[in-house]
Amino acid sequence: MKRFSIFFLVIAALISQVSPAPAGANGQLDQILANMQKNAQGIKTIYAKMTQEKRDPVVGGKEIYRGEIFLKHAGPGNDKVRINYTSPSRQSVSVIGDEIVLYQPNINQAIITSRKAQAAKNQEFSFVGTPYNSVPELKNRYNIVLKGQEQVGGASTAVLELTPKGASAAQKLTMWVDQSTWFPVKYQVVEKNGNVSSFSLSEIRKNTAMGDGLFKIKFADGTKFIRQ
Image (tube, rainbow, N blue to C red; front, side):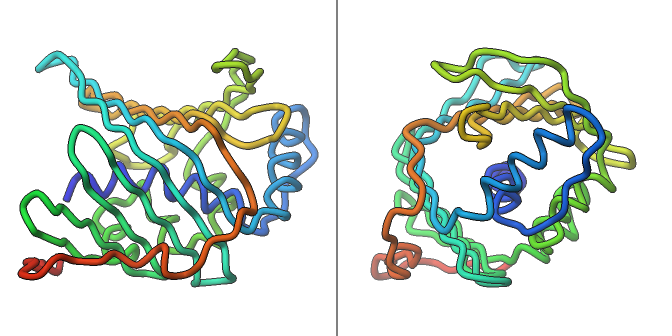
């Protein structure tokens, strides 16, 4: 179930981009947040290819996952997310409203949980349970600092660093925001145990048609369902 926390980082970041929340006007950081907010108001759907990397400095080496992500914003409580992993193995994650499903066809198993249940277990991601308050929640839970600018691929990005104000498994979170689209294209989380997880989004497309059926996982016969 720890991997659900990793999924949250992508899901929460994307959902926060379509959450109507006011931004302040105190300096360059708040101007960036205001630009992100303005961009978010016109987003109904998002598609992107995703690369996820996790490094463990104690064990050594890294895990790399690749796939694609779909998001559909359909009003409060009706966000839909689908992540299809293509390597190293095929897995699917579906989020429809409050329900989260992780389907692993290689072992014919599906784990079913909820955003609220997982947010309760992982306090640092509790804003996922109430996504339409996500921006205020971020400000309440994190000190946010503009660290500068960096090139990510072909994009000039603003680098935002978020440090938890209270108890958290995360030491810090970093977000790279494309300054031409005001959309985050990279995320990184450093945990207190030293583990580092990063996510890069590419080939981002907004407001393409997405039917609701896209977000429903089709299970093979004999699938074992586990509710947590």
